[in-house]
Length: 353
Image (cartoon, helix red, strand yellow):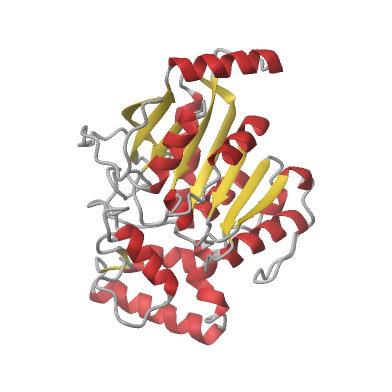
Protein backbone atom coordinates (compact mmCIF):
# COMPACT_ATOMS: atom_id res chain seq x y z
CA UNK A 1 0.00 0.00 0.00
CA UNK A 2 2.78 2.40 0.84
CA UNK A 3 3.39 5.13 -1.71
CA UNK A 4 6.54 7.21 -1.95
CA UNK A 5 5.80 10.86 -1.24
CA UNK A 6 7.91 13.84 -2.20
CA UNK A 7 8.10 15.53 1.19
CA UNK A 8 9.48 19.02 1.71
CA UNK A 9 12.32 18.83 4.22
CA UNK A 10 12.73 22.56 4.79
CA UNK A 11 10.80 24.28 7.56
CA UNK A 12 7.87 25.87 5.72
CA UNK A 13 5.31 26.31 8.51
CA UNK A 14 3.50 29.58 9.21
CA UNK A 15 4.94 29.53 12.75
CA UNK A 16 8.52 29.26 14.06
CA UNK A 17 9.86 25.99 15.45
CA UNK A 18 9.97 25.91 19.23
CA UNK A 19 13.36 25.23 20.83
CA UNK A 20 11.60 22.92 23.31
CA UNK A 21 10.68 20.28 20.72
CA UNK A 22 12.22 18.08 18.05
CA UNK A 23 10.58 17.67 14.66
CA UNK A 24 10.70 15.19 11.80
CA UNK A 25 8.61 14.28 8.77
CA UNK A 26 6.87 10.88 8.83
CA UNK A 27 4.38 8.94 6.74
CA UNK A 28 1.78 6.30 7.55
CA UNK A 29 -0.85 4.29 5.71
CA UNK A 30 -4.63 4.20 5.98
CA UNK A 31 -6.95 1.24 5.50
CA UNK A 32 -8.04 2.81 2.19
CA UNK A 33 -4.57 2.33 0.74
CA UNK A 34 -3.54 5.98 1.01
CA UNK A 35 -0.27 7.26 2.44
CA UNK A 36 -0.49 10.30 4.69
CA UNK A 37 2.26 12.84 5.32
CA UNK A 38 2.73 14.18 8.82
CA UNK A 39 4.97 16.17 11.13
CA UNK A 40 5.96 14.41 14.34
CA UNK A 41 6.75 16.74 17.25
CA UNK A 42 8.43 15.32 20.34
CA UNK A 43 9.43 17.09 23.55
CA UNK A 44 13.15 17.54 24.12
CA UNK A 45 14.98 15.73 26.90
CA UNK A 46 14.47 18.32 29.62
CA UNK A 47 10.71 18.43 29.03
CA UNK A 48 10.54 14.64 29.01
CA UNK A 49 12.51 14.45 32.26
CA UNK A 50 10.05 16.72 34.02
CA UNK A 51 7.10 14.74 32.66
CA UNK A 52 8.55 11.37 33.62
CA UNK A 53 9.14 12.60 37.14
CA UNK A 54 5.51 13.70 37.38
CA UNK A 55 4.14 10.46 35.91
CA UNK A 56 6.22 8.31 38.24
CA UNK A 57 4.81 10.21 41.19
CA UNK A 58 1.25 9.77 39.88
CA UNK A 59 1.59 6.02 39.41
CA UNK A 60 1.40 5.87 35.60
CA UNK A 61 2.18 2.27 34.58
CA UNK A 62 4.58 3.17 31.75
CA UNK A 63 6.58 6.22 32.86
CA UNK A 64 9.19 5.60 30.15
CA UNK A 65 6.58 6.08 27.43
CA UNK A 66 4.71 9.29 26.68
CA UNK A 67 1.09 10.14 25.97
CA UNK A 68 0.43 11.12 22.37
CA UNK A 69 -1.99 13.33 20.41
CA UNK A 70 -2.94 13.30 16.71
CA UNK A 71 -4.05 16.65 15.25
CA UNK A 72 -5.73 17.73 12.02
CA UNK A 73 -7.71 20.64 10.59
CA UNK A 74 -9.08 23.05 9.74
CA UNK A 75 -11.04 21.59 6.84
CA UNK A 76 -9.23 22.64 3.66
CA UNK A 77 -6.01 23.51 5.51
CA UNK A 78 -2.65 21.76 5.79
CA UNK A 79 -0.36 20.66 8.61
CA UNK A 80 1.88 23.68 8.08
CA UNK A 81 -0.92 25.88 9.44
CA UNK A 82 -3.07 25.55 12.56
CA UNK A 83 -2.78 21.81 13.21
CA UNK A 84 1.02 21.98 13.24
CA UNK A 85 0.91 24.80 15.76
CA UNK A 86 -1.41 22.82 18.04
CA UNK A 87 0.84 19.77 17.78
CA UNK A 88 3.98 21.76 18.55
CA UNK A 89 2.37 23.46 21.54
CA UNK A 90 1.31 20.08 22.94
CA UNK A 91 4.82 18.72 22.43
CA UNK A 92 6.18 21.70 24.39
CA UNK A 93 4.01 20.43 27.24
CA UNK A 94 5.31 16.87 27.17
CA UNK A 95 3.19 15.05 24.60
CA UNK A 96 4.25 13.27 21.44
CA UNK A 97 2.15 15.07 18.83
CA UNK A 98 1.40 14.26 15.21
CA UNK A 99 -0.02 16.85 12.78
CA UNK A 100 -1.09 15.21 9.53
CA UNK A 101 -2.36 16.18 6.11
CA UNK A 102 -5.66 14.40 5.42
CA UNK A 103 -6.08 12.10 2.45
CA UNK A 104 -6.03 13.92 -0.91
CA UNK A 105 -4.62 17.01 0.80
CA UNK A 106 -1.26 18.76 1.18
CA UNK A 107 1.66 16.34 0.95
CA UNK A 108 -0.50 13.26 1.46
CA UNK A 109 -1.41 10.92 -1.38
CA UNK A 110 -4.72 10.61 -3.19
CA UNK A 111 -6.17 11.70 -6.51
CA UNK A 112 -8.07 13.80 -7.40
CA UNK A 113 -6.69 16.40 -5.01
CA UNK A 114 -8.69 17.98 -2.19
CA UNK A 115 -11.49 15.46 -2.18
CA UNK A 116 -13.40 14.82 1.03
CA UNK A 117 -15.20 11.75 2.37
CA UNK A 118 -16.90 11.12 5.72
CA UNK A 119 -15.51 7.58 5.85
CA UNK A 120 -12.01 8.32 4.56
CA UNK A 121 -11.55 11.39 6.76
CA UNK A 122 -12.64 9.49 9.87
CA UNK A 123 -10.21 6.71 8.91
CA UNK A 124 -7.45 9.32 8.63
CA UNK A 125 -7.70 9.95 12.38
CA UNK A 126 -7.87 6.24 13.22
CA UNK A 127 -4.84 5.54 11.00
CA UNK A 128 -2.96 8.27 12.89
CA UNK A 129 -3.80 6.43 16.12
CA UNK A 130 -2.46 3.22 14.53
CA UNK A 131 0.81 4.99 13.73
CA UNK A 132 1.23 6.52 17.18
CA UNK A 133 0.37 3.23 18.91
CA UNK A 134 3.35 1.54 17.26
CA UNK A 135 5.97 4.12 18.29
CA UNK A 136 8.35 2.94 21.01
CA UNK A 137 8.17 6.30 22.80
CA UNK A 138 4.35 6.27 22.98
CA UNK A 139 2.12 4.59 25.54
CA UNK A 140 -0.58 3.11 23.27
CA UNK A 141 -3.09 3.29 26.13
CA UNK A 142 -2.74 7.08 26.31
CA UNK A 143 -3.61 8.52 22.90
CA UNK A 144 -5.87 11.48 22.22
CA UNK A 145 -6.85 13.61 19.23
CA UNK A 146 -7.48 17.26 18.41
CA UNK A 147 -9.73 18.33 15.54
CA UNK A 148 -9.87 21.98 14.47
CA UNK A 149 -12.77 23.63 12.61
CA UNK A 150 -14.32 21.05 10.24
CA UNK A 151 -11.98 18.45 11.67
CA UNK A 152 -13.54 19.03 15.09
CA UNK A 153 -16.66 17.24 13.92
CA UNK A 154 -14.53 14.55 12.28
CA UNK A 155 -12.63 14.10 15.56
CA UNK A 156 -15.88 13.52 17.45
CA UNK A 157 -16.95 10.99 14.84
CA UNK A 158 -13.62 9.19 15.18
CA UNK A 159 -13.89 9.19 18.98
CA UNK A 160 -17.35 7.61 18.71
CA UNK A 161 -15.96 4.92 16.40
CA UNK A 162 -12.62 4.14 18.06
CA UNK A 163 -12.38 3.48 21.82
CA UNK A 164 -8.57 3.61 21.63
CA UNK A 165 -9.01 7.38 21.56
CA UNK A 166 -8.96 8.21 25.25
CA UNK A 167 -9.44 11.99 25.03
CA UNK A 168 -10.69 14.34 22.32
CA UNK A 169 -10.60 18.11 21.83
CA UNK A 170 -12.88 19.70 19.23
CA UNK A 171 -11.70 23.28 18.76
CA UNK A 172 -13.79 25.96 16.99
CA UNK A 173 -15.63 23.06 15.36
CA UNK A 174 -17.83 22.83 12.31
CA UNK A 175 -20.12 19.86 11.73
CA UNK A 176 -19.33 19.52 8.01
CA UNK A 177 -22.21 17.14 7.38
CA UNK A 178 -24.74 19.46 8.99
CA UNK A 179 -23.62 22.59 7.16
CA UNK A 180 -23.33 20.71 3.86
CA UNK A 181 -26.91 19.51 4.15
CA UNK A 182 -28.55 22.41 5.97
CA UNK A 183 -26.49 25.52 5.19
CA UNK A 184 -25.45 28.13 7.75
CA UNK A 185 -27.91 28.49 10.64
CA UNK A 186 -30.19 25.86 8.96
CA UNK A 187 -31.03 28.39 6.19
CA UNK A 188 -31.37 25.55 3.66
CA UNK A 189 -32.83 22.92 5.98
CA UNK A 190 -35.72 21.88 3.74
CA UNK A 191 -36.31 19.27 1.07
CA UNK A 192 -36.59 21.76 -1.80
CA UNK A 193 -33.21 23.41 -1.14
CA UNK A 194 -31.48 20.08 -0.61
CA UNK A 195 -32.96 18.72 -3.84
CA UNK A 196 -31.78 21.78 -5.77
CA UNK A 197 -28.26 21.33 -4.32
CA UNK A 198 -28.27 17.65 -5.26
CA UNK A 199 -29.31 18.48 -8.82
CA UNK A 200 -26.52 21.06 -9.12
CA UNK A 201 -23.92 18.56 -7.88
CA UNK A 202 -25.23 15.87 -10.22
CA UNK A 203 -24.82 18.24 -13.18
CA UNK A 204 -21.36 19.24 -11.95
CA UNK A 205 -20.22 15.62 -12.12
CA UNK A 206 -20.83 15.63 -15.89
CA UNK A 207 -19.90 19.20 -16.78
CA UNK A 208 -16.61 19.59 -14.85
CA UNK A 209 -15.95 17.06 -12.08
CA UNK A 210 -12.53 18.58 -11.36
CA UNK A 211 -13.80 22.12 -10.71
CA UNK A 212 -12.57 23.71 -7.46
CA UNK A 213 -14.33 26.11 -5.09
CA UNK A 214 -14.25 27.17 -1.46
CA UNK A 215 -10.97 29.03 -1.29
CA UNK A 216 -11.09 32.32 0.61
CA UNK A 217 -12.16 35.11 -1.73
CA UNK A 218 -9.45 37.65 -2.55
CA UNK A 219 -9.65 40.59 -2.81
CA UNK A 220 -12.53 40.96 -0.41
CA UNK A 221 -15.72 42.62 -1.72
CA UNK A 222 -16.88 45.72 0.12
CA UNK A 223 -19.75 43.94 1.81
CA UNK A 224 -19.00 40.55 3.32
CA UNK A 225 -19.80 39.02 6.73
CA UNK A 226 -17.23 39.54 9.47
CA UNK A 227 -16.33 35.85 9.54
CA UNK A 228 -15.31 36.02 5.87
CA UNK A 229 -13.00 38.89 6.78
CA UNK A 230 -11.62 36.75 9.59
CA UNK A 231 -10.91 33.89 7.19
CA UNK A 232 -9.15 36.31 4.83
CA UNK A 233 -7.04 37.70 7.67
CA UNK A 234 -5.76 34.19 8.39
CA UNK A 235 -5.59 32.36 5.08
CA UNK A 236 -4.65 35.19 2.72
CA UNK A 237 -2.00 37.02 4.76
CA UNK A 238 1.44 36.01 6.05
CA UNK A 239 -0.28 35.10 9.32
CA UNK A 240 -1.56 31.82 7.83
CA UNK A 241 -1.09 31.65 4.06
CA UNK A 242 0.42 28.45 2.70
CA UNK A 243 0.90 27.45 -0.91
CA UNK A 244 -0.47 23.91 -0.37
CA UNK A 245 -3.56 25.02 1.53
CA UNK A 246 -6.84 24.81 -0.33
CA UNK A 247 -8.34 27.56 1.80
CA UNK A 248 -5.42 29.84 0.97
CA UNK A 249 -5.80 29.16 -2.75
CA UNK A 250 -8.52 27.61 -4.94
CA UNK A 251 -10.36 25.53 -2.35
CA UNK A 252 -11.44 21.90 -2.78
CA UNK A 253 -13.36 19.91 -5.37
CA UNK A 254 -16.93 21.12 -5.77
CA UNK A 255 -18.23 17.55 -5.85
CA UNK A 256 -15.65 16.45 -3.29
CA UNK A 257 -18.04 17.09 -0.41
CA UNK A 258 -21.11 15.57 -2.07
CA UNK A 259 -21.17 12.67 0.38
CA UNK A 260 -21.03 15.05 3.34
CA UNK A 261 -24.35 16.66 2.40
CA UNK A 262 -26.11 13.29 2.50
CA UNK A 263 -24.58 12.10 5.79
CA UNK A 264 -24.70 12.97 9.47
CA UNK A 265 -21.48 12.59 11.41
CA UNK A 266 -22.47 12.85 15.02
CA UNK A 267 -25.23 10.27 15.42
CA UNK A 268 -23.34 8.21 18.03
CA UNK A 269 -21.35 10.85 19.88
CA UNK A 270 -23.76 10.50 22.81
CA UNK A 271 -22.14 7.07 23.30
CA UNK A 272 -18.57 8.36 23.60
CA UNK A 273 -17.33 7.09 26.95
CA UNK A 274 -13.92 8.77 26.83
CA UNK A 275 -13.21 12.38 27.75
CA UNK A 276 -14.18 15.21 25.39
CA UNK A 277 -13.48 18.94 25.55
CA UNK A 278 -15.34 21.20 23.11
CA UNK A 279 -13.81 24.68 22.80
CA UNK A 280 -15.39 27.61 21.00
CA UNK A 281 -15.05 31.36 20.81
CA UNK A 282 -17.87 33.42 22.26
CA UNK A 283 -17.87 35.61 19.13
CA UNK A 284 -17.49 32.76 16.62
CA UNK A 285 -20.10 32.51 13.87
CA UNK A 286 -19.72 28.73 14.24
CA UNK A 287 -20.34 28.64 17.98
CA UNK A 288 -23.72 26.97 17.53
CA UNK A 289 -22.04 23.86 16.09
CA UNK A 290 -19.96 23.29 19.22
CA UNK A 291 -22.77 24.03 21.64
CA UNK A 292 -25.21 21.74 19.84
CA UNK A 293 -22.65 18.93 19.55
CA UNK A 294 -21.87 19.18 23.26
CA UNK A 295 -25.56 19.17 24.20
CA UNK A 296 -26.35 16.19 22.00
CA UNK A 297 -23.23 14.36 23.24
CA UNK A 298 -24.36 14.73 26.86
CA UNK A 299 -28.15 14.66 26.61
CA UNK A 300 -28.83 12.69 23.43
CA UNK A 301 -30.80 15.50 21.79
CA UNK A 302 -30.16 19.07 20.68
CA UNK A 303 -31.58 21.75 18.43
CA UNK A 304 -30.55 21.18 14.82
CA UNK A 305 -30.37 17.39 15.22
CA UNK A 306 -33.21 15.38 13.72
CA UNK A 307 -32.22 12.26 15.63
CA UNK A 308 -32.68 11.50 19.31
CA UNK A 309 -30.55 9.19 21.39
CA UNK A 310 -30.13 8.27 25.03
CA UNK A 311 -28.16 10.47 27.45
CA UNK A 312 -24.41 9.81 27.59
CA UNK A 313 -23.34 7.07 30.03
CA UNK A 314 -20.30 9.16 31.04
CA UNK A 315 -21.39 12.83 31.06
CA UNK A 316 -18.98 13.73 33.86
CA UNK A 317 -15.93 13.75 31.56
CA UNK A 318 -17.50 15.97 28.88
CA UNK A 319 -16.73 19.71 28.93
CA UNK A 320 -17.73 22.80 26.96
CA UNK A 321 -15.40 25.80 27.18
CA UNK A 322 -16.46 29.13 25.64
CA UNK A 323 -13.59 31.61 25.24
CA UNK A 324 -14.75 35.23 25.84
CA UNK A 325 -13.99 37.61 22.98
CA UNK A 326 -12.66 34.96 20.60
CA UNK A 327 -13.84 34.58 17.00
CA UNK A 328 -13.73 31.39 14.94
CA UNK A 329 -10.27 32.03 13.47
CA UNK A 330 -8.83 33.25 16.77
CA UNK A 331 -8.70 29.59 17.78
CA UNK A 332 -6.62 28.72 14.70
CA UNK A 333 -3.51 30.39 16.10
CA UNK A 334 -4.60 32.41 19.14
CA UNK A 335 -5.24 35.65 17.28
CA UNK A 336 -4.20 38.98 18.71
CA UNK A 337 -5.69 38.06 22.06
CA UNK A 338 -3.73 34.80 22.47
CA UNK A 339 -7.09 33.12 22.96
CA UNK A 340 -6.05 29.47 22.79
CA UNK A 341 -5.78 28.08 26.37
CA UNK A 342 -2.77 25.85 25.76
CA UNK A 343 -2.28 24.97 29.42
CA UNK A 344 -5.97 24.07 29.76
CA UNK A 345 -5.61 21.68 26.82
CA UNK A 346 -2.49 20.17 28.39
CA UNK A 347 -4.28 19.79 31.73
CA UNK A 348 -7.24 18.09 30.02
CA UNK A 349 -5.02 15.61 28.21
CA UNK A 350 -2.79 15.12 31.23
CA UNK A 351 -5.79 14.20 33.34
CA UNK A 352 -7.44 11.90 30.81
CA UNK A 353 -4.51 10.17 29.11
